[in-house]
Length: 274
Image 1 (tube, rainbow, N blue to C red):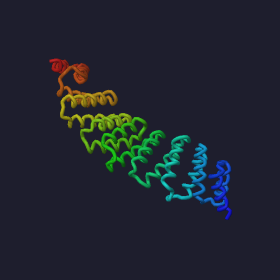
Image 2 (cartoon, helix red, strand yellow; image 1 turned 120 degrees about the vertical axis):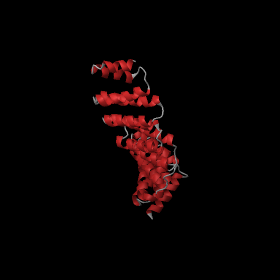
Image 3 (cartoon, rainbow, N blue to C red; image 1 turned 30 degrees about the vertical axis):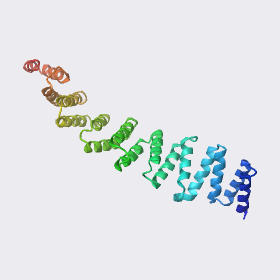
Image 4 (tube, rainbow, N blue to C red; image 1 turned 90 degrees about the horizontal axis):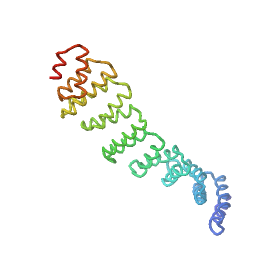
């Protein structure tokens, strides 16, 4: 009975008397008497919204969401996310609200786009890629869009193991995906897997059609084998393969001349210059 009387009183101050302060006081009393009165909570949140009291509105809406659980209205979650993204700048709360919204409708492009934006702002790049992959797999984004997303994440601290898995997947689906290949080489180098990077480059060289591209890959492999691993014999073999493809005065030629001079192999030097 008290709650009903208070509800009528709140309506009076919301209407003819137009006293927001008193209306808020009455509504808060209703919520004390009936903590699960979601209608009162919604009206209270609306009062705080009218007064620009974002923190109080957020607190009340969070309370309503906790009471309603999985049955909470999407508009409540949207408003929670808006407040967390905007005046409150609380990325964790915004992510929680948007993730919950996404569970209700995983294919909602607006929610997903907002979630990706917040995850970016919060620096949660692993989750950005996970959601981007799900969107790509169901046809919600193009290969180019997904690859650009992963490349952006890789630049901002994406876990190497996750980046490697994703770029491998892209390369397996399209063997000509040059950027995916280069990202894999970069991951190898970051992880000090120098021999793995050189092997990857040589394998790519054997599969490449253009002599100039093959020669460039061999040169890069030779540079890694020599500079990072001091494996002179394997480096020389890589440079020799490059020079066989493009017999010109370039990195391979200079490296092979250097190898020959170190061995005092004048015949080899003459062959190279011949």
